[in-house]
View 1 (cartoon, rainbow, N blue to C red):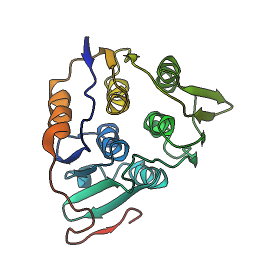
View 2: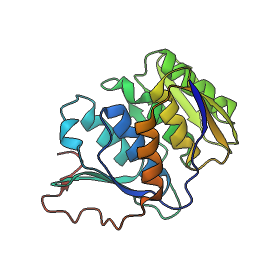
View 3: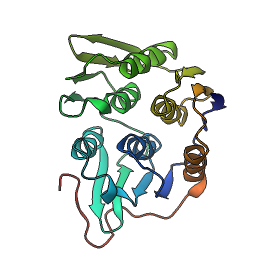
View 4: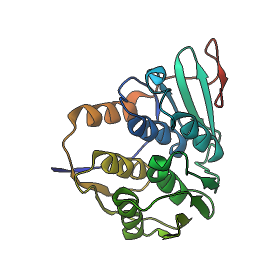
Amino acid sequence: MTTWPAPLATMPVRARIDAATTLDEAAVFLAGAAVTTGTVVLRNWDALAEDPAAPVLRDLLATFGAYVVRSAEGLTCTSRSTSGHLNPISYDLSTAPGLAGVACVLAALADGPSRLSGVPQSPRVTEVMDNLTALGGRVTMRSGVVAIVPGPLHAGAWQAHGDPVLGALGAVLGLVVPGVSIVGSPSRPAFLEAWRRAMAADENILPGTSAGTVPYYA
């Protein structure tokens, strides 16, 4: 297990990514674009697109206000806002409960209260809620509904409890909240290298211009 400081984004994340091997990893890279007013192209999206939760992830990001398109190059997620604006949402996750973690993190950074329904009680969801609360968020759960009221978040430890996905979710928050440290995350050099490379890439990406671009729902 390791402790590492979550890199703070000093500029919008603009990167082409090949490293995501699961939908969980795809979600954190795409979320990185949404929270930093950036653009991420996930070039190996086709390898993940058959996951039943894949269309839900696309729709979830779009509901938060991101522009999400699919093209011959892959899946592109870009912020529509130049100020980091994320929409507050009311969203049913019953068909993709595994996305509750990334949804909670994005909702904690949104411009108003959000409501996530269809969320089963699970260790990961509980730990995300506990981490957000420890860093200043207001998160409650009742009868499968998670309510998130955004507020000022502060520096502190994000406990990963040996879960690499949980650690990666903390890294998303750390892009925009200074001083977040990921504690107890399994050592994953490949992910950390890809994450830091994405932070520094600053590629010139124009979303929606690739040949064969189709809307997020296709």
